[in-house]
Image (cartoon, rainbow, N blue to C red; front, side, top):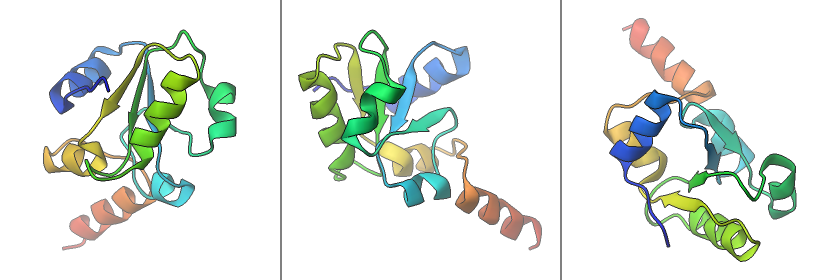
Amino acid sequence: MNLIARDELKAKLDAGDDFKLVCALSEWAFQAKHIPGSIHVDNPSKVTENLDKSDEIVVYCSDPNCPSSKYAYHLLTSGGFENVRRYEGGILDWEDAGYPVEGAWSEAETEAEATK
């Protein structure tokens, strides 16, 4: 399995690199919180609607123990996608580093902090 480290992923996002960042969590989890620039794909039948086999793809889910990104990685690579990597740390590792997130939950947390 090809992995990408948090700092490399952050550098790619900051540089505006052309790749697809795929959140493999449920729709609810994605709406609550995700890494900025992510697209949501939690249904294997929708992969070809959002991704092209020539795309550079990074998949992630919640944390190293979450099976969703492992499964997405397997589906993509076995389906002929050749440039796929997995961000093993997921959204929890991203937040632990203090990096920004988007979504309803992140907005609610920001508003709660502002009212303190």
